Image (tube, rainbow, N blue to C red; front, side, top):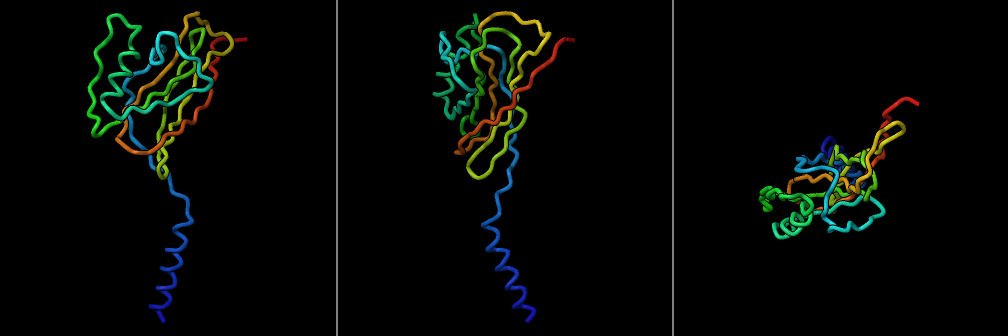
Amino acid sequence: MKYLATAIVLILLWSCEEDLPAMPVEIPFTSVDSGGSSYSLGQSAIPIETPMLFVLRSQEEFDSFWVQHRSGTIPAPPPPEFDFTDVELVILLDLVRYNSGFFVKVHRVNQTGQVRRVFADQSTPGRGCIVFFPVIQPFEMLALPKSRASYALEIVVVVRECGRS
């Protein structure tokens, strides 16, 4: 009888396991590059309607990206080296902005099943902030362990208050 009860409990646990949602696993990452201007979409930045993620999984993709990404920097810095057998790069690219004071910052990446979620803040200047008027496109580039997962972006707008009203 004792073995029958144990068998029933194990069968129930096994059958329930399929119905349980998978727990997210934190994915380690390193911020490789960030700033206010990425020329990755070419000299005439393509207006995008929402921040986007770009995933680079090969040296060829990275070389092509880097030439455009730093094309506005003279002299262009040499590209960092990555071993794409173990690493993939994810670039968070923000909207084109027509004044300074905007930033993007990734603070967490996790994976559930075959989806990696990138959690980031989109910082925007609030009342009292002094801004200048260059055309910018904030970005952050991350190095993560290689995967075949797809990516999703979850971004929160954070308004910085700079002065008193």
